[in-house]
Length: 139
Image 1 (cartoon, rainbow, N blue to C red):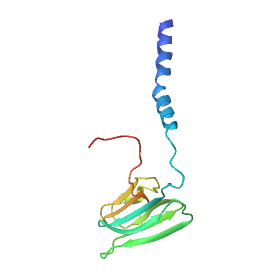
Image 2 (image 1 turned 180 degrees about the vertical axis):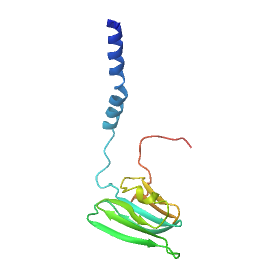
Image 3 (image 1 turned 180 degrees about the horizontal axis):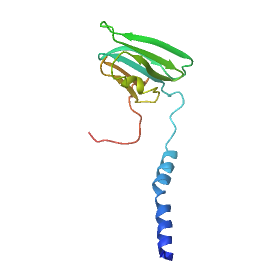
Image 4 (image 1 turned 90 degrees about the vertical axis):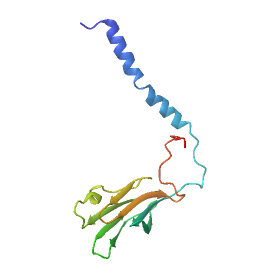
């Protein structure tokens, strides 16, 4: 049998469960906006065997561009840049993990093709590789 206080406690706990959402939303809205003109742009950095192969500007990119990264032994990765996102559209590696990742376009996202040693990482033009999420880790 459900009693009156049971219902009150359930409703109170349900309302309190949304308190963290309200607190974090309020805190995020109070953060100052970045200064005008200091907007960083996103760039995809493509590295092959640890060496930078190419940089592709993602911010403001329109249309579709494709190019191929080919190794001396015949291994290849076809890379497609569509609008402001980049992906590996085809590769001749066995596992195809890099192809199944899909398109990326946010700061800090990566695509890795281990068999061909190809890494695509989205960075900002200021050199940031991870978004500023407000977490401070002491060193």
